[in-house]
Length: 249
Image 1 (cartoon, rainbow, N blue to C red):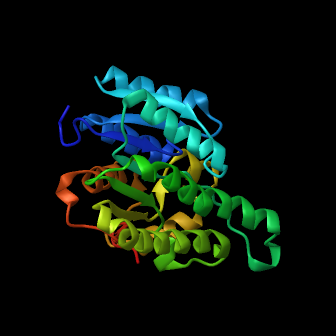
Image 2: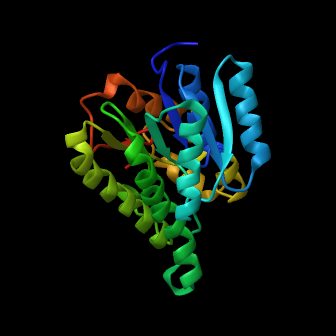
């Protein structure tokens, strides 16, 4: 175990699998106490907590739907109650569904905007009173905001909003010395992208073909960037959107 984040407490939303789980494990490996949030998969969250504690780290699983204000507040309250403070918020919870415009429905729109945009707003709002000088907010956005793939209108719209929130909050919270940055991954191999059918598809080979480093991203390509942004190594960075995509743009 290293100690870049010793003494810090981190909340990672949507951390039961995929990128969120990878970020939770990486923050814990650097000494942070981590709240592993899940919406539906307690089993997944418990597994992540088990891996962290087995490696000598500190973590607890806390359920909560980030798109509901009361649950977002309860999630933050549980973090503070459990570990006594809050220093790092990783807004990672996200859902995606690609449809051509002709097939977009209100339900398709609201499901993605509620989790991907309202979620970070509610969690950050709940966390703000607890964050002190040196705190770091990390929004997990997406490379789609630069690549704008067809049929991703609503999803790319949510992530465009996340990029905008990142810039606004950096200015809004800067006077309190709270930093806000975003990580914008390209295609990453996760449980989600596998079940979505992206991995092993024509879409994957199309993306790999446009990626200078010539492969699909892995969770451990993304997690160290979150560690960097959470740590004092990034103390002079705020309002950044870090395209973390192997060069695809």
